[in-house]
Image 1: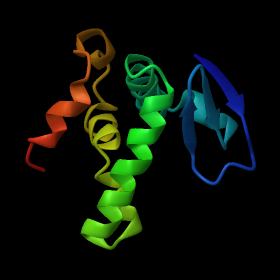
Image 2 (image 1 turned 90 degrees about the horizontal axis):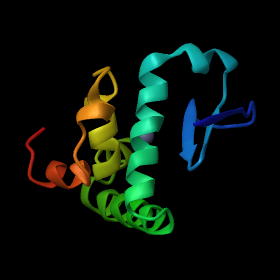
Image 3 (image 1 turned 60 degrees about the vertical axis):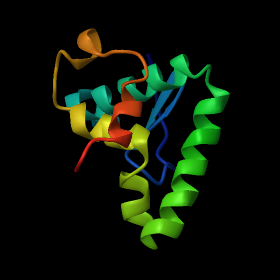
Length: 109
Ligand SMILES: [Zn+2]
């Protein structure tokens, strides 16, 4: 995982496989931020990168129509639900099953 410092970034972190962009240099030491982006890398790899972004944007667009709230629409993207649910579980990456984000489709929250 190659971490790049990008002070112009409008969010604290962003996964663009094989890179992770962080706004604040101290983000490198933020274990949950790093795990969150690592989970996105797994999602991106298993979807062969480009389809991940298409599904991400599509899921966001559907959520905007559904919730009419940008923040809620973002948090409810299946990829984000998995990442936010698991980014404080240190050993999650080792235990994670492929396409784990699909389970979020049926999981109550
Ligand atoms: Zn995320």
